Image 1: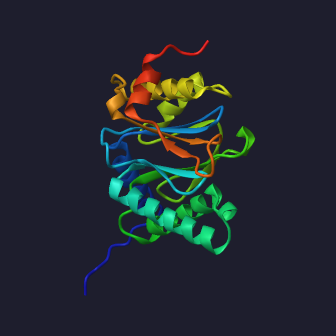
Image 2 (image 1 turned 45 degrees about the vertical axis):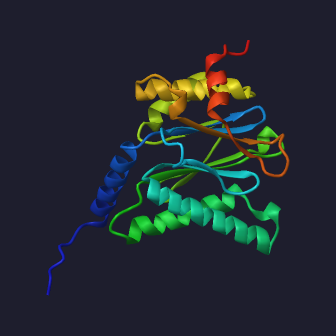
Length: 231
């Protein structure tokens, strides 16, 4: 019979938390910023095909950092949940809060019952008919969830990023100003020049018809970053 050494629960939780944080810190960061017409999601991502930012449903978007295979599994599960709920009830019943709660429960279960926790952080956002109705939920590797407003950063250097965003954020930003502010904050924290080829960006734009999600192209990002800030 094999002998299983006793590990105090608080030590086990601490070890799993440190493991997850180290894994997330090895990846690249991401941010979300509310602007005048919706919510901007922006991430440092050199890949053109392995997306960190994706559409979940009509008004709901997803962003993840950390281990790609793990947050991609969660993204797919979120899309399936949204489709099932929208089909069974109504499209208006699919909300960011519902998706965020499902992610929170899944990550909490994985963190407490599996040997290895997921090395991920997630953002789920929903654009409202006006800025006051926007929703941003930040979900950590252990299932902790926070309701954010204005802006939020995730990744290994989230604290530094949040400080940079706090210094540059203002309500009612134009999209171009929000993109420049977020990309500058990422470049400052990562201590490297901002390269458009390494930026992935998308918006939830309330001025669009039913599906609010739209990716920003490389040419669009290059024009915005090169332009002068609004007066």
